[in-house]
Image (tube, rainbow, N blue to C red; front, side):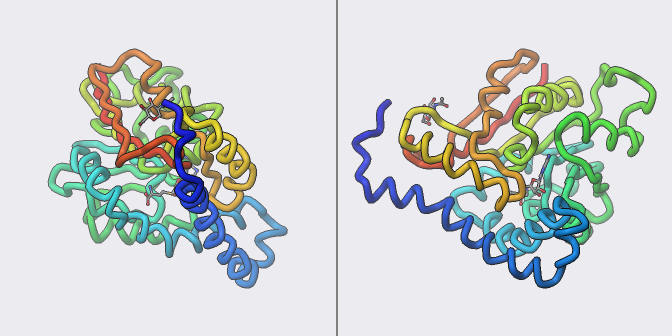
Length: 275
Ligand SMILES: C[S@@+](CC[C@H](N)C(=O)[O-])C[C@H]1O[C@@H](n2cnc3c(N)ncnc32)[C@H](O)[C@@H]1O
Ligand SMILES: *[C@@H]1O[C@H](CO)[C@@H](O)[C@H](O)[C@H]1NC(C)=O
């Protein structure tokens, strides 16, 4: 469906959205520099994590309150039960969605250590001692050693336990920040880590190729976007990856809102049950 008929003003409004977020993030750069000048020299990657934490401390709760998204995220996270793994929980701003009495243990794989204090504090409030933080990303090379360290998978085995480990694996706007060239491998490991009948529940923004002008614009913005957004990329493909693989009993992937094609962000929610 071509969307060339979209009025220019409507298009510009859609294109300003990422720039608006960028400009807020830029505002936290001098603050981070002021309080952590040495970090930039001693560890540029830690500096970036600290910068993102300063930014996310303010923006995370606002995003989590977004009226367009909140009910969809609620639908997903309220399904989580038993032993749960969340990929990139950030500062725990989405944690209030979990149904506490349904959850045995929630493991949160959050690579940004600066977010951990607030994440743990939030978990204390919402999940009362049922939370275990892991300092790891979603990509297998980072996640699997952390799961071994936590005693969730055997330290010596070369393959993952046949019977799976988790009843639910959750990702909310975090897989865009994991290495995109490893996305297929990451989702394959997610599937392998699920118990039979377990569910992969995700809410992510993904690319859409119906509008070439928007695609070009997103390609351009994506040159600087990850620097300001904690490594996030605009060209998410988790929907395509999930659709392209077998091993699911059921997969429901839905686009959120009245997406028309010219928007930079297309949000999807996914409920995928492992066979
Ligand atoms: C946009 S924030 C979303 C945080 C949280 N899920 C929420 O909705 O409030 C993206 C999160 O992904 C995390 N992240 C960065 N790299 C990651 C990776 N390789 N794997 C998983 N998460 C990652 C970031 O640290 C950050 O907490
Ligand atoms: C783009 O979005 C439209 C509307 O949600 C959808 O029908 C179409 O399949 C999407 N295209 C891709 C490549 O995801």
